[in-house]
Length: 150
Length: 473
Image (cartoon, rainbow over all chains, first blue to last red; front, side, top):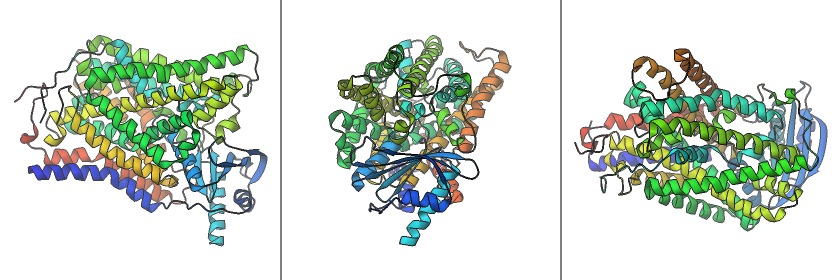
C-alpha cells in the first residue's frame, strides 16, 4: 500500500491526534470537581456514616498557597485495616488545583503517584496507602452525601 | 529530507554516558514521596534494585556492547524480534514520554515558582508559560546535536541532581552527628521490610519504574567513542551514583521530617524548606530551588532526546514517512523533536487547565506505566532470546554465569516488569467502576502503542531515503 505526499501528512496528523485523543476523552469522561464551599466537616461526617474509627487526629496547615488548614486522621475499620487520611481546605479553585498539580508532579520516577487524592468542594483529601479499603468506604460515603445534598 | 548528511561525531566517553543515565533516573522529586516509608524505603529500594535496576543495567550493558548501533532499545529488540518488535518497543518508550512530560514540566515550574514566590504556582498562566519555555528550550538544546546536549547534561546533572542530593545527605549526617531528634523509630532490621499486601501492591510498579531510564545511554551509541568498553562501565558508574544518592538522601529526609508533614505536603520544596529551616539554613531554600529546577530540566532533556534520536533512526531506515526523517546539520532529528514538542505542548495545556480531573490523570499515569513495562518486557525477552538466536555475536560484556546467569537476570527483569504491568492495572480504591478503569488504561495503552503497526502497514520503498549506514541507496 503506498501513500501520496498528502497521504503521508494525513498519516502523521492522525498519529498526532491519537496522542491527544485519550487525554481529551478522559478529560470529558471525568468531570472536574467544581469549587464550592461545603459547610462543616464532610470528611468526618462521611467517616461516621461509613463506620470508620478514628484512632488519632491532628490539625494541620499545609505549606501551600491558599491552604486554610485541615486535619490528618489515622483510621481503622472493623476488618483491621489502617489508613492515613489528610484533608486540607483551600481558599480558591486556583490554589486547590495547584495543590492537585503539585501532587501529580511528584509521582516518583515514571510510576504512579504515591497515595490517592480526591477533590471534595474546597477540600483536597489525600490518603495512603493508595488502595486502602478504608478510603474506598470513605469515598463511597462522600459520594452518597454529595448525592443527598444535590 | 535531511538538510545534510548527519555525521555522527564521537563525542561521548564514559563519564558523559554515565551522566545521561543519571540524568534520566536520579530525581530529587522522588525523595519525599519515598521518605514517607521510613526505614522500609530501604526494603522497597532493594526490591527495585533486585527486580529491575540490576537486571536492566546488566541487560543494557550486554545488549549495548553486542549491538552498538544507534537506536538503543530499537536496535536490541529488532535483533531478537524483528523490525516490528523493535519499532513497537521504541515507540512505547517515546509515546509514554508524551503523557509523562507534563508531570516533570509541572514539577520544574512549581519548583521555580518556589524560588521566586510560591504564590506563582497557583497561577496556571505562569505554570504553562514556564512549562513551555522549558519544553521548547530543551528541544532547542537538542536541536544543536549531541555535543551541546552532552555539555548541558553533564553540567546540569551535577548541579541539579548530584549536588542537591549530596547536600541533603550532608545535612542528614550533620543532623545525626549533632544529636538532633530522629523522627523515625530507631533502626532495626525488621523495620526495613516493606509491608506488601493488596493495599500497597500497586506501589510495586512505582518502585520498579523508579529506576526506569537506565537504558537511555544506549540511544547514543553512534556518538560514543568506544561503546564496547564504555557502556558496561557507564552502566555500573551510573547505577552506583543513583543508588547512593537515592537511598541516602531519602533516609536523610525521613529522619528529619515527621511523616505527617511529608504525608500532607509531598512537594519536594516544602520538604526541603522544613529540612533547611530545621537545620538553621533557611536562606538556602531559594538557591536550592534553582538547582532542583535545573535538575528537573536535565531529567526532562534525557527523556526528550534519547527516544527521539531512536525514532529518528527508525525514520531513517524507511519505517516512517519521510516527514519524520528530517535531520539538521548537527545530526538532530528535528522533525521528531518538533512533532514531540507540539504534541507535548497540547497535553501540557490540558494538564494545567484541567487539573482537578484527578481520576483522568491517574489513568494517564497508569498508561505511562503500562507502556514502559512493554518496553522492558521486550528488552529482557530480547536478552534471553539473543543468547539462543545469536550466540556467536561478540559481546565484549557478557552477563556472567552462562545461560543460567542470563535466565536469572532476564527472568528477574521479566518478573518485575510483568508484575508491574499487572499491578499497573489495579485501580485506586476510590474508583467505583474498575471495568471502566481497566478498559480505559488498556485502550489508551493500545492507542499509544499501535502507530508503529500503522506505519509499517503503509511502508513503501520511497520512504527509504538513506540506508541505515547513512549512505544514499
